[in-house]
Amino acid sequence: MSGSEPLQVSDATFEEEILKSDMPAMVDFWAAWCGPCRAIAPVVEELARDYQGKVKVAKMNVDENAKTPAKYGIRAIPTLIIFKGGQVMEQITGAVSRSLIENALKKAL
Amino acid sequence: MPAWDYDIVIVGAGPAGLTAGIYAGRARLKTLLLEKLIHGGQVMTTDLVENYPGFPEGISGFELSDRMRKQAERFGLEFRSGEVLELVPGPDHHLLRLEGEELHAGAVIIASGAGYKKLGAPGEKEFTGKGVSYCATCDGALYKGDTIAVVGGGDTALTDTVFLSRFAEEIHLIHRRDSFRGEKVLQEQIFALQKEKKVEIHWDTVVKEIQGTQAVETIQLRNVKTKELSSLPVAGVFIFVGIVPNTAWLHDRVPLDEWGFIFTNAQMATSVPGIFAAGDVRNKLLRQIATAVGDGATAAFFAGSYLDEQRSR
Image 1 (cartoon, chains in turn green, cyan):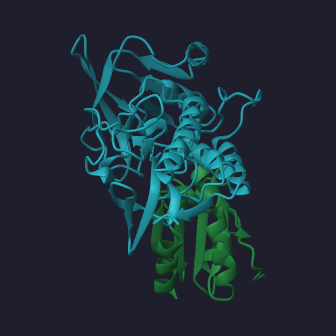
Image 2 (cartoon, chains in turn blue, yellow):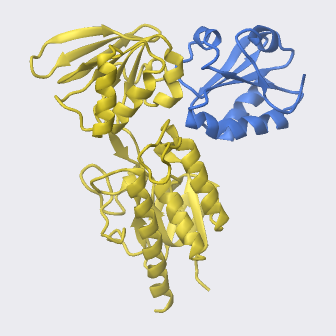
Image 3 (cartoon, one colour):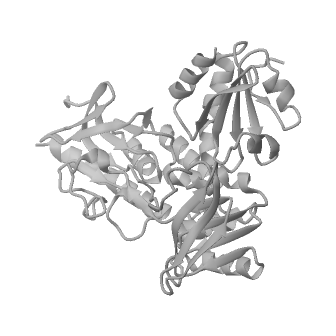
């Protein structure tokens, strides 16, 4: 499962797909009514394509999944978390530029 | 040939800037729209816009601004993300300084909008993103089943309280006056929620302090009439107490009112020839999408007239 589309993850699949992932993973925590989340969605999709095979890019809907966002203390979205070996490498909140996200990704590679 | 890169540069891609872009594009003026963050501006964070004509069922803020953007692009508007650091007005064209770049424009339309105003209470800054929020549509879903507070009494505070009532178990609506300023339709929705015990209204009350350890746990309140102090346990505080104009980047190069909003005449012209302003950034009485759109059209039209006069000189 290494398609170029962001992978949809849930509370049930989070550990297997993200924490136990062989490559670094970036999770976009979002919700349908959050305008800024929708605004950065194309950037997340671009990064999923551009970093295919290097970074596992995933999305989690916080409206349908409560456990994982609570575990990471997420109280604002969009939030992007970059994981490596099950550890949080970087946490970015708010709609930010592609270059800022990319810099954080490069650090995790 | 004119000695500039663009006939018009529009700063800010909210409804005012995007509408100016549609009109400038249709006037076949070479136009660039610069946006610092993401198109849409404050509208982007509105769940459902119900007072913009043409959408009887309402439309999400995201979709409305996305449609405006597509419409502007259809008429040839050029978009770029970039922050204007400085605007230097000149006698026949204006200089816009961006990071590592300079642009010259025949006319400039400032539509940089406004941002949310902070409360200025202790703990507010510390807990931003950890319980303090300025965007209900962004963060509301993370407060399912919680008790939260909303601060404010205008349209945004009331709309967002209604939106947040889908998630939160209980909402304390804290307002410093004894009546709301928001639309009557919105007030009716709030009073209905009050009857259902979903919303408790605290009139004449201000937030003194926001407290917690890792995240927000308690807010300290003060009644401005009785001076009585109280505290409420809440998981989140949503703050909607007004807006501040995004005009710091202008460094007073155009005349501003005492709050920082730009003075214009009925043609949206500032007192600096060739520099116009539209939307929430302007000194005006009603800040709505419907009025921003009118400002944008007017500014683009008179910027076009200004350029025609310049050319025929």
